Image (cartoon, rainbow over all chains, first blue to last red; front, side, top):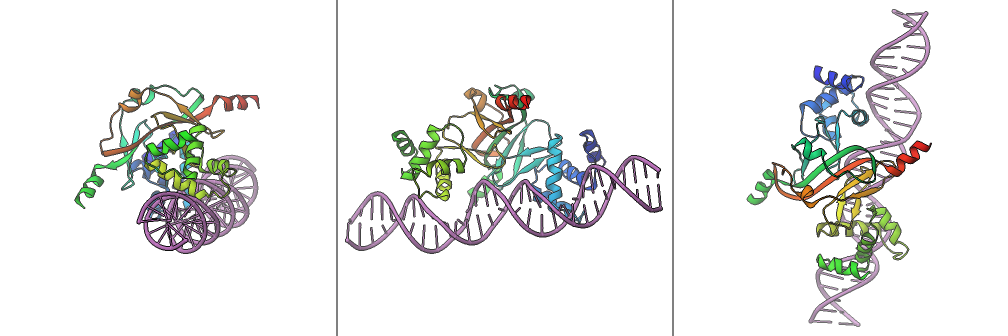
Length: 140
Length: 140
DNA sequence: AATCATAATTGTAATTGTTTCAAATCAACC
DNA sequence: GGTTGATTTGAAACAATTACAATTATGATT
């Protein structure tokens, strides 16, 4: 809990109960949760929590660079509290998002978009089927 | 028009009026249009066209590898009839999507996701502000 | 401690992109 | 020309997200 609070302050975000809870959840659960997963998980500790607050908080965190927003899943947005540049793999069977580590150089040193005057985000996404889901498919 | 029909047949898709129109639009307009842009543009030539048909057609084209689906814009999906691997840049001011050409090697030769048994899509996205929009911002 | 001003949270309602589905239409084949 | 299956259509349902006004919490000031 203490780490999440410090984390927020480092990014210049006032650490309310709700914000600390969301940040903490993201730091302790490296599962790239959705808004609903975060909301459902925190509801037991903060019974008055509103889904809107989760949306607001995640937007705020993203604006301050404290979380990554993953648009890898067409149906819903995933969030990542681990902001060091890395890629992601989405399994279209189970819907899970996996981290893909890669060299800094590999991620950063590229052709820059010609029309871009300013770059705020970059993302490298893979989609497919994870090993676990492929095994299940073979069995059935 | 003839090219679009051939294009569809090359991917094993039966070329109905609607499908040819959608494919043709994508080949002739390298603007990464949305469903609504395609729908609106084709309505004058096919007055009975349904939005659902555009959705269906794009799904079919994607399943056959005839178009790229771009999840770069959180608010809506963009489509690209140019399927050769390349990256994309999204301007969050004007909402336009730009192509970013890059080496084949650069796009393909990478660390592969550990958990991935099968990869169906890969995408490299940049977000930011385009030169045009930055100029406008400076003026005002 | 009480008051005040501002910031944050909440819950409902509205919005919007997309999907579902059954009916209508079309196309190809006998 | 009729039959069968594929395609298209449009309305309704759905789900993620946003807008917004009301409520509640927070921090500063006296």
